Length: 103
Image 1 (tube, rainbow, N blue to C red):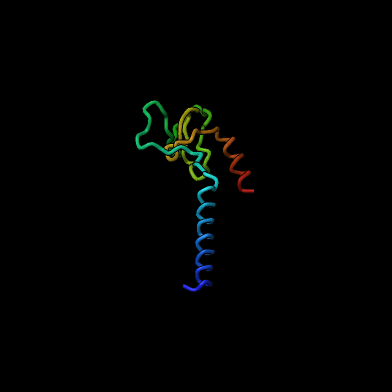
Image 2: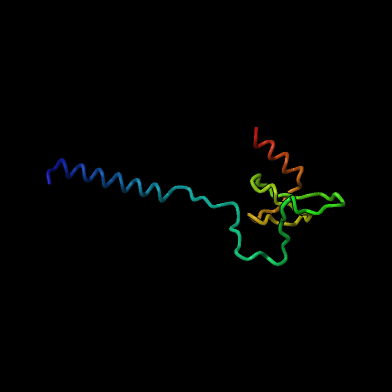
């Protein structure tokens, strides 16, 4: 191998080593949302579709804060979304947040 090729190979190897070292030292990110469990918890109330909700007394409605899951509702303030297991928020609070995100 010629000295020039040897130098090029050494520079390439050093560059790859630096690249891998920097990638390994980068910030570690974790998902803020908990992983949904395969089995629903027995003591947790989950949501129903808005079209299935029976609310003759006009009680406060709680909804999943994720706009994609806005059809997931409950009358129980401690309920969890059936799709993502997030804690529900009052419907009016969610509507304000959704309107802000669309601006």
